[in-house]
Image 1 (cartoon, rainbow, N blue to C red):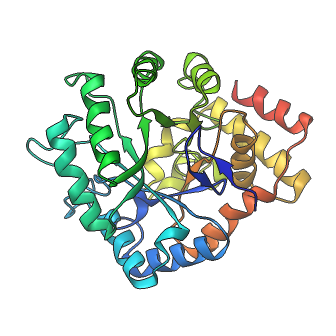
Image 2: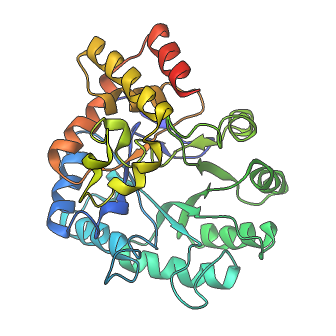
Image 3: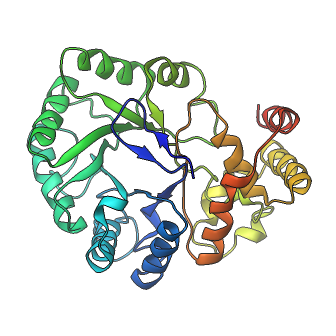
Length: 314
């Protein structure tokens, strides 16, 4: 499998990143281990998580996903065979939020401990922090890189203006955001395409979009409210149950039939073909879902396929 360089960084990754938000939420530790074993066994290596995953789940306090990944690494070894990406900045408790140098120094130690590793391949600002000067945050990252705790840095949920500001400061010798995590899929194009995508292309910032399958909606399994009833993540896709969203699913169905593929595989193939995208992030909660997801890399769309999907999702 051909790997892709993440922006202008030292990292090369397989073309799909596994979204670790499900670990400790909709996948317990035993299933998470099976998923990670199969993911790496299939030749993939890019695992994305965050300190805050999965704090939203009742009874959790954050750090569950990193802890499971750390336990898996300790059990399996092979730390150098995977690229671990995690994030800092979302609220983890009182006074545990943002991108201030003081908090980042504390947060990285907590993440390293949970991950049971001495370095993070890609440490990402989970969201912009308007209360901390961008320069101060980049200087904090510089210290973490100098200390060997972080290899490369990335941004998530940044506007074009704020990402551009950070990239300009990096030209003065500060670390550079090598990746961006935007919400991006066939039903979420407007917030990324345009100024933000143009900036990433111009500055060679690798895009690793999240919600690539729109919380499962683009797999075609949610076509009515009844389909979503009782599903943990189903309600997140309810906003796409409209004429446009269902039109996108219909286009996915047609292209999938042509390629003897699944709708979700076509949705991933569309992302993989975007010039700005390095490795879209997607999750699975069982081995069958994972197998279907990973086969997305074998689906190659032609010009007619892309035009059909572009028109349905415009």
